[in-house]
Structures are given as C-alpha cells and as structure tokens.
Image 1: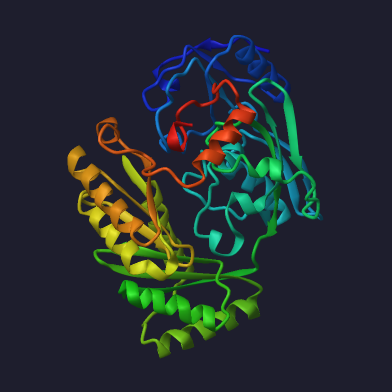
Image 2: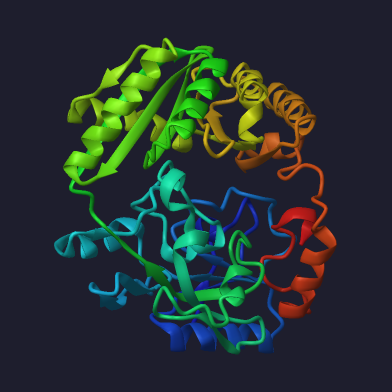
Length: 408
C-alpha cells in the first residue's frame, strides 16, 4: 500500500478536513487502507467524484479520507449477458464510452456524469429522468463488493441478472453515503442503445394539466423512457421521451399526440438538436447551485409539490427546477438571495410537503445556510432500524460519522 499523504482543504467534506488521505490503486490497497484505519481507530469517509458530498450533514469528525479515483477499471464485460463489473472509481462517462462500441449503456443519467462514479452512484442511489422506465441505481446493480469497517471484504449479489443470492447485502448500501462500508466494485445490468428516440414537448402547462396528461398516458398504456416537467416561471414545460425500435417509437408518438389532443395540451415532436437542448435544461436544474434541494411527494399531489418548488425558487433568483411527475420527485437549485431567506423558504416548503406525505432534503448548500437549516428534516420512522444496521456494520461509528439522517 502506498503511504497516505497529508490532508488539505481540498480533501475536506463540508468544511471538515482530514489529517490523512489514502488513494488506493485497487481493491487490495483499499483493503489495506481500511485495515490501517481500523487498527488506529480512525474516523474515515470515502470520496469518488465528489458529486454528492453536499448531501447530508458535515461529518462529526474526520481523521482520514479514502479516494477511489485510481480504482477506475472495467474488470469484466459480458456483452451477451448484458452485465459489466467495474471498480468503484470509474466515472459514468468513462463507463458509457467503454460500452459504446458494443451498442450498450448503463441506463442511468444523473447529474455530473463526467464526475459521478460507480461507487458514488450506488451509495447515493443516483438517477436521472431515465428512472421513469429503468429505475435508479438500486434497480441496475446486481452485485457489489465492499470493505467493512473492520477491513474485512464482503460480497453480495452476483454476476448475472438472474442470480439473487445474497442480493440484500448490496441493497443495504444504496443511499448510505459511505456510512456502512467502502464499495470497491459494482456489477451492473446493461441495456442496448435504443435504435431510435423521440422527444415531445408540451410547453406552458399548469401543474393540474401535467398531472392529468401523465394520468392519460398511463391509461393509454404508453411507456415513456423519461418524463420531466421543467419549471418555466410558474407553469411547466413537459418533456416526454420514447426509446426503442423505430416502428414502436413512432406508434407511441402518434398515440401520445392523440391523447394530448383530447386533453387540449398543445405540443409536438422536437427535432434532435431541440430535444438535446430541452433535456439539457432539466440537467441544468439538477446541477445549478450553490444551493440545491431534492423534494418528494406522491405523484397525485403534484400541485402541492410545484407550489413548494415555487416557494423555494422565490429565494433563489434566477434559479431552476425540474419535477419528475411519474416519480413524485423534484429538484431546485440556484444562488440564494440570502441565507435566512432560503433557509426560511426551504423550511416552509418542507412543511407544505409534509402535509401530503412529502419531504425535502438538502443536496448542497453554503455553510451559512446549513447553519440555519437541517439537511434532512424530521427523522423517518425507520431511524431505529437504521441505527441498528449501522451498529452491526460499523459498531465503533467510524465511517462517515454524522453524515446520514439522524446523525448516523
């Protein structure tokens, strides 16, 4: 194992700087680093591309950071089985580039693809609008290897989609933000690149019209690959994308136009450059900062969700927002007009969402906002179970301490 280097401000997590930084070149070195941390009882956190370091709370203490950037290889690719096994530090863009010659992809489209890593996607349960049809990382990971707090290597899942033995083990890691172990490799299921895709845009819809049109699409048994409603000054610009074989895509487009006509929602198919620009708008809404928040509410309560977005954006002049209406998830970001104003707006939005069974979490925020706003909000009903799980896998509480909900 290469010797750790001293930590610096660039290695810190939300202002908490480590004394040491390990940069292992593979699983063996990563295990040695974890064993060294266990031996010296160091509090340790893990960093891949850093895209979700703003999610959650600052660590309550930090002695060491393990960076996975040198663990970035494709370990195994079976094109006929549509699976790939990769090291945790490979970026999504690099992985997609490796799969492209085989006309395959990992059907994930989260923000910051050039930085988002395989391990980070698992530990933050990453996703984008393709979650509409393909799910989040949770639905595309079929196995993983990770190192426990005591330095022991653990495996879960398998190499093929049909193998479900032990699958519960990697499922525990989804969204855990590195509080349960260091992911070293991930097995993903893949999908073929679509032969054709088509995007339809329906601009200037009210939240009720979006909810109604999405319901009509479901009644018509349409199967969009991605659906996003982009905030447009109080109204919503709805984007719907279909993917697949040419005849199937054309048929879905015609049926949606017929459904929209009956619903009196005007719109049409976008040319490829226009479609790319439209989807880039929703990506911007996920990446703009320095304040970023995630909102959730049942899809049937879309109007409540969009009002909460409006409340938040009032404190983010020039900000952007997007709602995934089939999923009940929204995102907003921008530059706060003031720390107190955005903290108050986020608190008001959180309260409004809670009345309909929703929530708001902070994905990133300046320190002065964090000082006024809890990143997670009220603890979930599952907190006691999560604490027991943490105690089982990290009994000394050394892994990313305090980062997760409830101070876990």
